[in-house]
Image 1 (cartoon, rainbow over the protein chains, first blue to last red):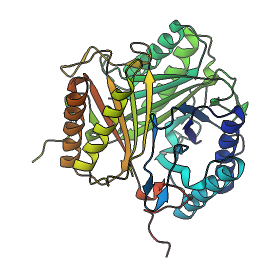
Image 2 (cartoon, rainbow over the protein chains, first blue to last red):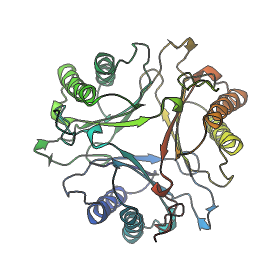
Image 3 (tube, rainbow over the protein chains, first blue to last red):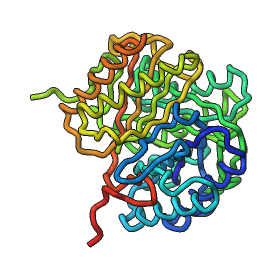
Image 4 (spheres, each protein chain N blue to C red):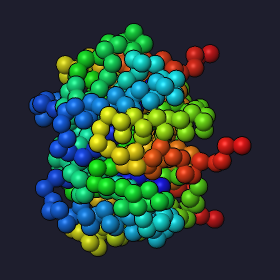
Amino acid sequence: MPLVRISHVTGKPASFSAAVSRSVHDAMVETFNVPADDFFQILTGHEPGRDLLAPASFLGIEHTKDVVFVQITCAEGRTLEQKRALYASIARRISEVSNIKASDVVINLVETKRENWSFGNGLAPFAPAVS
Amino acid sequence: MPLVRISHVTGKPASFSAAVSRSVHDAMVETFNVPADDFFQILTGHEPGRDLLAPASFLGIEHTKDVVFVQITCAEGRTLEQKRALYASIARRISEVSNIKASDVVINLVETKRENWSFGNGLAPFAPAVS
Amino acid sequence: MPLVRISHVTGKPASFSAAVSRSVHDAMVETFNVPADDFFQILTGHEPGRDLLAPASFLGIEHTKDVVFVQITCAEGRTLEQKRALYASIARRISEVSNIKASDVVINLVETKRENWSFGNGLAPFAPAVS
């Protein structure tokens, strides 16, 4: 059910976005009980320094022009422990499969009701039954 | 009050995005009590298969590389019946005016407070009056 | 903690997006208690009239093809007074540093829990401590 928006700098090889995309998905499967075939993502490339902006340092963490933003809209209800595990897994996986540092992975969750989703054919598969 | 983000594949004629855009708006007017002149949309084209990703099948619904994502940020308060009607209307309308199949229309709602909007001049027209 | 998405028309000089970007950030520092180094933004340029759509008039406010959308995902908890001040400050600042009219500045807030953020290294700095 998550819809993932990944915003990265332009000028990377195609293998880069594929690796980042896969890292985020695998982390959600691992920590958020997301089915393997629940894979909906939108990726965009942005001009570094002009269209993708992060501070040199925030909360003691340093950022470079290679910052990656991962904004995940998902159903509400995950626990704090699950969220902590998700952040750790995404940052670790991306840093393992690319030259992006874990410090350059910025993540934000937007939680919505389960009835707020349709995955095709105009249906609302996770909405409660109408009584 | 809705802000609509439509993400589709690149390489379509200009008439394509106009038809999809209009379909989503008309569906909101029909089912969500959105005024005809409340028309705020951001459209983006994405490289199919690389930057716009959907599973071949999820919940029994098949997706192709032509998947269209419609993410609608709107005021909270619509009923489940209204949401079901919105999903059905968007999917039907897009499939009628383009070669996109209803199965390739993925929709997500993000609901916010009515005070979370400004439509120009720095005003908050739907915020409660300050007592 | 905010993540700001700014969507503007293409074909502007680089100084334009920098000025708009700075305006939004300064307004958040002024009205939303955002630290100066809490500066995370994603900017995108869109084809006017085709990919960035606003009505000619809504609620008595006129829009042109130069409309700018500012969507801010932030922690919940700001007061209505703060939100009103934010909208006014963003619209005023953008209109002062660019040729964008205050009437063409459309703003939307998406509020989330404080635990829904990671700013690098997979940490959740604003989550409550696990007991």
